[in-house]
Length: 135
Image (cartoon, rainbow, N blue to C red; front, side, top):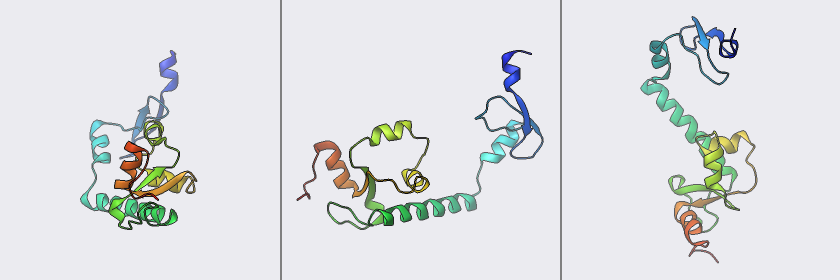
């Protein structure tokens, strides 16, 4: 047996339950492309449920961090963004496996070092190092 075949193991297809070969530990296993495509195609109902779930996670995170922009006081959900106080947002996005920061925050019990800013204030801090609303 060569090294490659030792790493492969037989698992169940995530869609239909038939035997499938898992080539790497992180790979999701399917018995065919048909099962893989069927697994990943979401119905409109499931897409809407995922949106509602993420909105709730984001709302909870916003409420935990004060519910308004720390600089100007903006309270509208759509305008708020999470900001890394000491910088590092770009590094976080490149190294994090989380697609959404709100999910990361919830999973890590809302860590310190994050604040809530509106997109305008967040951009001003990012580009200029200060915000015109600032004291």
